[in-house]
Every structure is written in structure tokens, then in C-alpha cells.
Image 1 (cartoon, rainbow, N blue to C red):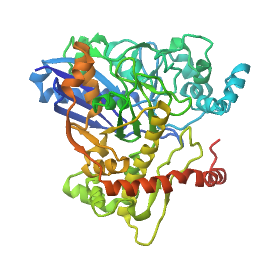
Image 2: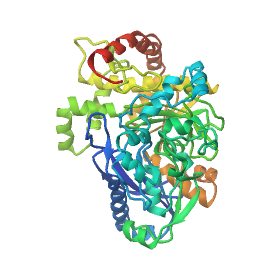
Image 3: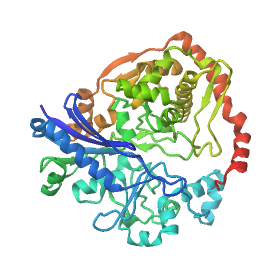
Image 4: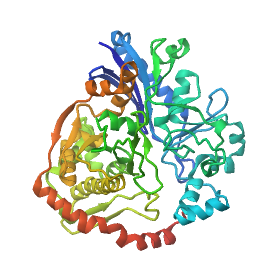
Length: 512
């Protein structure tokens, strides 16, 4: 039997996983760390060395427990959180802390478009979006506030590229990992060929500061003696590209065509499908490059998705935390007990999960409406789960409309997918069957698919490695309740509260 070593580097932890050629997870080591620190309000930074140190610790621990299996590893691949930037010198040494995807800092207001672009972007109503992207781009902020750092920057890397450099010694990255504030040409899956493209000015980074790009499932090097001594990965092991964590989740859950949608119940909740056709799920917001070569992942994301559960536990779950510690289980398991006692629709309590606004709802704030005196903590928890699903269902409808496709089934990944009750609620809310993969570590499985795919074909790897533990079919009565609430209540929340959100923003804080 042969094995694949997957490294899954997330926001709150890094996991080293050992999969066999049939998709079975043999062992896993998880190294938790503080997600980020905030030297200033709205900043989110992390020491890039934490990720590499965690990788070395996780793999060495995994090797100690699986010495014989490590002799049969045929490849290693890394999948990481998206839009986390690492600036390095010519030796690959980080020049400052990594700026992670949760960071909300902005550079000063500036219009980077030329005369003709201003006219064109104004006509298509994207001028302000271009300016907003300019302000959120990390290179523009660095050049404005830390120019000495930018002058020393040899490469501007995403976290995926940084870990690949540590493994290979090359400034190289997968096209399927290029998701962030970077001048990537998503349609053609490359850096823009035209040196005068608006992307270079909007994102503010020069081509020479970016890594070489290669397709996913590509062998890009072998583990050197030095890296082997640090990580415990056998010397000579092939290093294979995969893609972003969400992209790996999508392929790892078996969602490989446009009649299927992958739901990710993670810190950011997302809905993705896989399409050979390029289409934008939101106008001018591109589909991301898929782990399947020459394909796309149209996606809608709920920026603070299942982070809301962590927020709820932190602010209101003191008793559940105490009980979870006594029982040695995750607090979410305690909270999921509420789901059995609260009916569909949370007895009229509805949550709008826009704790952080998106490009299409720039003034949105979170809202919980419909309170009455009989509502409890349990109602609020169920309303969070339902609110996230309502938002994802809205995203599915956008994807279907823009892509002219029909989604017929769902797959689930992420922490929330471990709950069978949440899976059943999801089937009811979408009125579609929900396929639960055999392992909830679908991001790591997606990376493992690339390892075996590089040695045969990705189609053969998918056929051999994707398996499901259960299918959840919708309950007709609950599906009808949710459909009515979705159409007559949830879909009207943003339009009804838009002006109120805008006034709150103007009156209570400065977010220019």
C-alpha cells in the first residue's frame, strides 16, 4: 500500500495527514496556534515562522507514530488558507509578519485607473469596486506605510508559495492557490501578459516580485536532505502542487461537476461548484482556479460563516464550555443538543450573517430579527446555523442563474459537517440531498488526490478515493417551512435594512 502526506495549513491550526490510495485517513496530527494578533485595530497578522514550525512539528510527530508507513510515502502536498500574504527577501526570509485573510486595513483613497479605464469602469459600474480593491491590496498598504519593507521585498508570496519555497527552495506556486489580492488573470489562470493591464496598477505589485506559476498536480521538486532533517519527510519524496483549502475541499468532497455544489462549513462558509466554463458568480468577481486542471470554482462566501459559532460560544457559551471541558468534548457538540429541541425556523428568529460586509453588500451589518419572550439561547444558536444556510442558499441561486446551471446535490465539509443534525437541516433548507464524505478532512484529502493523480490521473484518483458515509434526504414538511421563510423573510432583510445599515455606519464608526 502507498501513502500520500497532506499538509493542511488553516487559520487556527496545521494538520499533517496520512492517506492511502483508497482515500482512507490512517493518522493525523493537529498543531493548534493563535489565529492572529492585532497590533492595531482591524489588523490581523501572524509570524510566518509559526506555519513552518508547526509543519515540522506535525510531520515529525506523525512520522514517529507511523515509521513503516512513512517509508511508503509517494508524495507530499500542501494546501493552505487563502489570501494570506508573506513578503520575503532573496533568501526567502520573511521581512515582516504575514498579513492574513482576516486583515481589514486599507491604504489611502486613490484612483489607480487611467482616463479610458475610468470611463469603461464607470459604465459597467465597477469604478468604486476597483478603488476598493486597490485600497485593500496588501502591496499598496505596504508601499504607503512601510516603504522600506517594500524596497527589500524580493517576492510577494501567498502562504501556499511560502510553504512551497520552504520545501523546494524555489519561488513557485500552484495556479489553483492564487486566490487573494493579487493581479491574477483568473480566466486564463496566469499572471497578466499585458504589462499595461489595469490589474498591475490596482493590485500594486510588479511581476518580478511574484512567483512562477505551475498547474495543480505538478511535481515541482523533491525533499532535500536539509528539509528531510527538519521535517521528517523522507529525502527524495516528490513535492506536488495542489490548491487552496476551499478548492481542495471541493474536489476532496467529490464535487467535480456543475450539477453538484460543495458547502464548506468553516471559519468562512462558502458554496462552490466546479465548472469547465468560465462564469462570474457575482458580476466582475471571477471564479477561482480549481484543483482540477483547466477548471474553475465559482464561489459565494460568507466571510464570517462558522466563525459565528465561535463568537457565540465566546460571548454566551460559558456553561457549555464548562460542560465540554468536564466531558472532554468540543463545545459545539454540547450546543448541537439545542438543535433537537428547537423547531425549523427557530420559532420566527432569523439571523442575517453579514458580520463582515462583502463587495456586493458593502454596507451590510449582522442582524437578528423576530425576537420574542419565549426565545432562548438555543433559538439563537439554531438561528445562526439557519442564517448561514440561508446565505449559502442565496449564493447557490446566484451561481445557478449566472452559470445557467442546475445544482442537484450538495456535499459538505468543515467542522459543521461533523454534525448529522446540521447536515439534515442543510438538506431540508436547500431541499436537496446532502452527501457527507467518509472523512471530514476533505481539504487534506483533496491534496492527497493530487499526489496520487500526479502518479496516474486525477480522474482515477477521484474514482478510487472519494467515498461517502451517509446521504441526507430532505424532509418535505420542513423544506416547505424553510422555503417560505427564505422567500418571504430572509430575502427581504438586506433591502429592508440597507438604509439603516448605512446610517449606523455613518453615525457610529469611521470606515472610509
